[in-house]
Amino acid sequence: MSTIDLSRLPAPTVIEPLDFETILAEMIADLISRDPELADTLSLESEPLTKLLEVAAYRELLLRQRINEAARAVMLAYAQDEDLEHLAALFDIERLEIAPGDPSTKPPVPATVESNEALRRRVLLSLDGLSTAGPERAYIYHTLTASGEVKDADAFSEAPGEVTVVVLSQQGNGTASAELLTTVNNAVNATDTRPLTDHPTAVSAEVVGYTIRAVLHILPGPEASVVKTNALAAAETYTDEQHRIAAQVTLSGVYAALHQPGVQRVELLSPLETITTTRKQAPYCQAIELHSEVVNG
Image 1 (cartoon, rainbow, N blue to C red):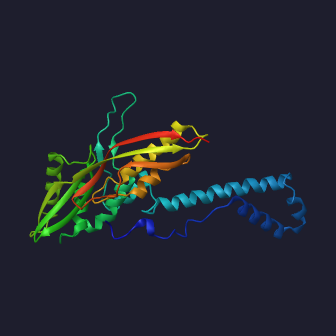
Image 2 (cartoon, rainbow, N blue to C red):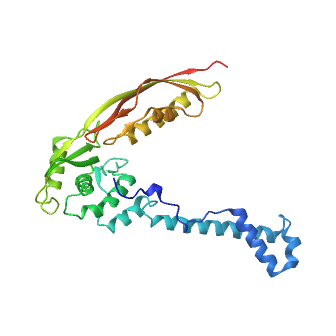
C-alpha cells in the first residue's frame, strides 16, 4: 500500500556487474602496457606470472562482490535480516515478535518474528504513520505495528468519521481473535494516533476458503514423487503469498505454480475460476490435493 513500489525501482548503478575473465584481461593488459616484453609470457596459462594474475583477479572479484553486498545492505529494497533491522531503527521501528521462543529446550527454540518483507513494508508506511489527519496508510501502519500477529491490514471509510480497520491474523486461516482485535483497537484509538473526528473500529477479515485439486501428468523419466513434491511446495508458496486482504487467486497463478519441470500437463479440478476478494476479505487455501499420473512414452 506504499506509494513506492521498491520492485519497480531501477537497479542501482553502484552495484556493478562482475566477471572474472574481464578483470583478468584488464590486469593482463595493464601489465603489458607497463612492460610489453611480457606479452609472450602472459599468453601462456602455465606461466607462474599468469597464475599470479589469476589469483589477483579472483581476489579483486571477491573484494568487489563484497562492496556490492555492502551497498545492498544500506538500501531498503535489498537489505536483509540484521542489516534491515538497522535501517528500520533509523525510523524507530523494531522487528515484531510473533511467538516467543523457548531457550530452555534442547536445542533452544528461537522466537518467531516478522519476515523481512513485513518489516520492510512497515518501514515504508512509517512516514504515513506520523500523520494525525487520518490517512489510510497511517491506519494500516499502526495496525501492522500493534502486534506481530497481524499479517495484513486495510483501512477505509464507508461513512463520514467512521473508519473500518480490517485485520488478517498470522494464526490459522487468518481470522483475527477477539484479543487481537482489542489490541488493534487500542492502537488505532490512541489519543496520539486517532484524529478527534475519526472513530476507527477493528474487524476481522472475512476468510474466503478454497481448495486446490489437480492431477499432474508427469513425463516419463523424472521421479514422479519429486516432481509432485516440487509442485506442492510451489503451490504452498503461491497460496501463502495470496493470503492477503483483497488478494486474487488466479487460475494462471495456480497453473504456473503446479507446472514445475517434469510436468507435461496440469489438469486443474479446483478452483475453476479466479477467486477475487474485497477489501474486507482474504482468500485462504484450506488444502492442496495433488494426484499424479505418469504419461506413457
